Length: 308
Image 1 (spheres, rainbow, N blue to C red):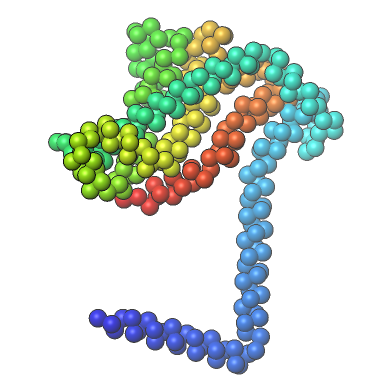
Image 2: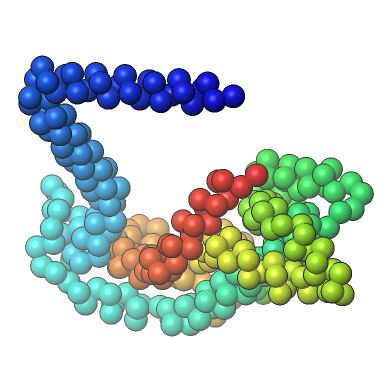
């Protein structure tokens, strides 16, 4: 039984002797090896820096355009740096439309969607992971199969359904579906619940705890990284949603930020500097959310990748 380990030790010893032999034949062996590693590190750094600049270049173009005059935006050749820094564009953008009201509307929808997604998806995922019932695997396969259906296929049936419910021009079509779960989030959270020992669930049941109590008191606290990941995905999707509000909202007082930005787009021309300033302001909360919660987000993705 010990033979494989003995073989590995022998190979390590041979490799060490070869290395020492090279070092004796050439005293600068280790120096060359160190230089080669340094060159590889520098090449990797340069490639990563170039890739980072390439990825950030559209963001910088947005910032640059938001600080230019309209004449400079339309000038040719285009300027990389603004000739005159027009910081007042941001104030004029905010005053061009009731963006404060749009922000409150968007925040209300986003928060309710996040709450709905976190609660419904985690509860459904716990059931698929820890509650045995007949046909569970078949039902879970059907849930996963819904991910293969393009969203645009269900667009018209959903609109007809919400119209029959008299939900058009209300927030219900944007909020209520979040409380019925989504296949991707259910799959993500189920992977986490599968890692919780079954003995822990059984011990809680022996103490008289119901599955709802176990999910609330044990399941949710143990799956914080996955919950944070679902919350960030939900926030990003609801905050940046353009098609949903465009379809279901007709009253200007109910508009969201994404719809409000359309005020800068005309049939004949577009005020690109104001549109970029508004887009940057709308993008800012998403960047801040990812910046402050990236630890949980990355941890959740890593654990999900390693889940069974």
